[in-house]
Length: 285
Ligand SMILES: O=P([O-])([O-])O[C@@H]1[C@H](O)[C@H](O)[C@@H](O)[C@H](O)[C@H]1O
Ligand SMILES: [Mg+2]
Ligand SMILES: [Mg+2]
Image 1 (cartoon, protein in one colour):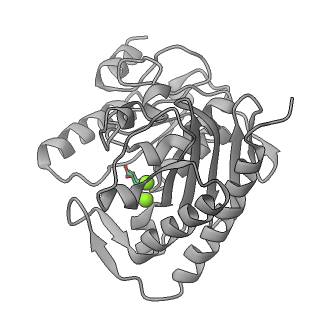
Image 2 (image 1 turned 90 degrees about the vertical axis):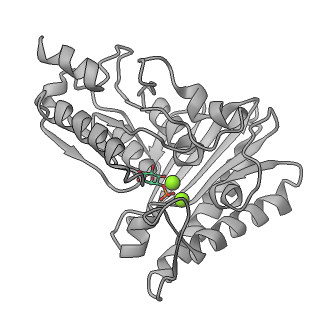
């Protein structure tokens, strides 16, 4: 059967590549930095320009499709996922990295129909790595198939996480407490690329066993959630339940901007979630 959405996916790959070129060129110029929810929640004109480029090019080709874009939502557009074909766009995932020229920056484009992710495209534009996944057809990086790690022992794992942009001391204390619990399991190491989408692609690539973060947004993980699941990984909330509903817009459906979940990926369906509670259990094995 012909793949209904292949044209849209080809368009997303081309748009992500063009967007990546704009991001790379912008790194050569001064970057004017603005803030959003706090002094460390950064945005630049390039975020806004790239999002408009992507949305305009899609509108020309697919005029009836809908959009959820990080910067459009920041400018007041609604963040509601319906059954209609919807493009979920994070024009620059890793804006702080971009501002500092820290070399992990991604363009993330997910596509949902009937509230199910159909394809995901993450372009790690400074590494020139194009991660793609089509529902039911596997995940790829520059055309090479991806497979999550087969490691089942968390003590032999690398875990990725991020600190987000909330600097409320109580929130930071909780993050540090989780970090401490995970590190002391002990795990081989902890990492963070500074972009949720690339962290998730590292999980899909099998070089990081799991990634967790509290408070990601739907645009951070829409595309990469499918890349992880098509590479054999799973996406869980803090209770160990299937969190794909959040990743593909569960909270967006309710009009919330933030997914507010922790996501952990493993190959098996077991809930070895390294939250405070579960990491204690791991210690007693
Ligand atoms: O703002 P942005 O750079 O698109 O996205 C952020 C990055 O992915 C960061 O690594 C993660 O910790 C935040 O939760 C995201 O919001
Ligand atoms: Mg993001
Ligand atoms: Mg962004």
